Length: 226
Image (cartoon, rainbow, N blue to C red; front, side, top):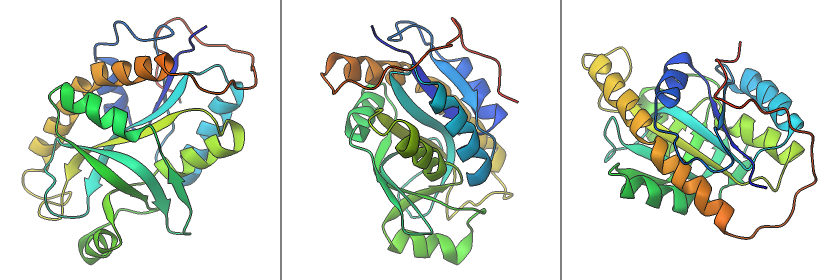
C-alpha cells in the first residue's frame, strides 16, 4: 500500500503556501503537512517525533531559503543533492535530481546543489565563504531534520527544496524584500504539483522494504503544528 508524503516546513507562511497548492493525485492520499518551528534544535525534535510515528512514503523538507552566491534569483528553487552543517556532517540526497526535473517540467527554475544549514541568519562575507565552500543556499532546519531521519527511518526517501527569498545582492530587510518574498511564496505554492509527481515517481520505482510502523495519519492536510 502506498503511504502518504510527509511535508515539513518551519514557518506559517510556508505552510500557508503549501496548503493552498494543488495536491490532487497525490500518491497515498493527502500528504501530511506539519510545521517544525524555526532553528535546528526545534526542527530536529519535532521531526523526530513525527518520524517516530512512521507510516510515510517519503519525506520532503520545503520552504524558503537564502542564496549564498550569484546566479540565483528570488523565486527560483534550490534542490539539495546534499545538506551540510557547521560540524562537518553531510546528508546526501539521491532523490534530488528527480525532484529538480519535476520542478523544471512544472515551469520553475531549479538549481541542484549543496544546501548549508546554519544556526543563525547568514549575511555578507559569511555568504561568500559558504559559496566558496560549494554551497548554493543556506537554511536553518534541514540538516537537523535529516539527522532525525537518519536515526529513526534511514531508508525513507527524502528531498529538500528551498525557494530563494534573498540573495547576496538583496539581503533581508532591504528594499525589494517584500516583493521577493511574495515571488517566493507564489513559487512554493506553484511547486506543489511537482512534489506530487516526484512522490508518484518514487512509488513507481522498487525500493527495499522498511520496518512496519503503526500509522496515525489524518485523512486531510492537518492544521499547522503548534
